[in-house]
Length: 512
Image (cartoon, rainbow, N blue to C red; front, side, top):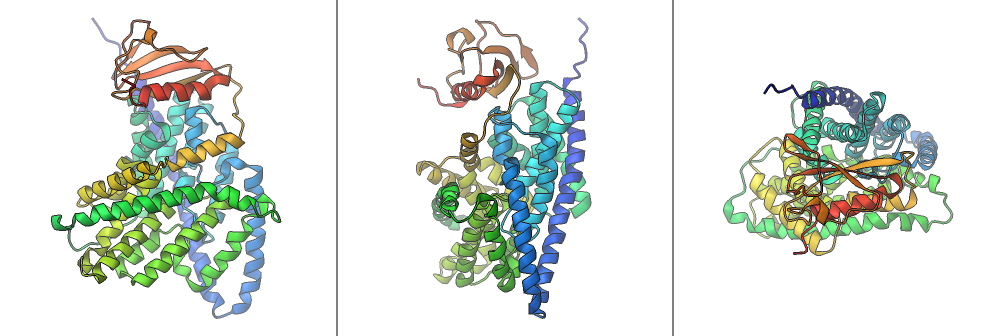
């Protein structure tokens, strides 16, 4: 029997290439603009020491810029923060936004917020920029809802890849933490987009890893006990970070004398003090991570950096400016790792040559605990550092930190931020019927169950079941298996509740 050629995968690859190419260019320019902005900002602060009178015009410019960005972010909530919760909400069907207004406002707002030295990361905005490009390509091409979400996920993966030059980890992060879907079509398109965007970015920034940290030796097996202790510390600090970040809206809201659109004035004024005394600490923190790994500061400097980075990153993010927490999380983790290493060195329990190793390990552990994505953390740091020698220590620290945060009832930070976002934002949807899809995990309630035996949400219809290379038209006797991706049509108004229920059945633990 003659088989017809299936063009589905080819079309997804071509779509991924197109999205990756555009996102790579957009995010690379975004990243370049931020780097030049930071250089200019640091130059201004250095010049101020010679000409102190420049402080007055700089203060006026900073306040005006803060008011401008505050008004833009207040009138357009979609550009506030990192943008990752917004993308997660879009892919879950609980949130919607228009791609072009978000794209240009996030691009300009992110450059002005991060490029002026605030402790915000470029990675979250890069993910949102990539997702808006993917959404734009899908809407211009008038594709269906499933392909639209695949394009958004592909653009998000490409955005993170271009920002960090870590295509594999970027793809895994979107699938593991943002989309929660490992369908073959999804990961294929996302990986192609991430690789393409990474190639474009490498032509701008070269082949050197973003966080290339030199180390003299691998961690001896006799020192692995330190990884357990460090993982516990990172888990405790990670839970503290989560709790603090989620309470920021309440704390800022207590300043009754300030309107929400004026909040950015606070970090823009405070950053002048930081820039005057410590200009090298400005920005998201990637250059600071490399500096502390090269110079191994004293315990006192590490403590000062930890307090400074933690407090001011919270102030920066709490002002609702366009900017993320991705890189600031890695920076705080690196500082905790360096501090732990220096304390152990001073007590005689660790060789000084291993401090840079603990800086690397702690970045992964802190990220894994806060975001609750250990696989992404391990791969991300491996790609960013450019070495496979740390896989085992990274895995140990990441898993310990993850377990500690889990025991302390911590939820993934981006999921928690999404829940807060949904509470204050109405769902934008004009469709009468919407489509959701999710992958069935091993041991979940739907694993091994016939379609007829599950009580599906009211008004829903199981449209298809994707199993490996095949698409199954389901009926009541169809047996669902782990690894299947189910596609369901639901009434648009019931989408959020239906998605939550189906995901719980497809990915949660079985009650048996």
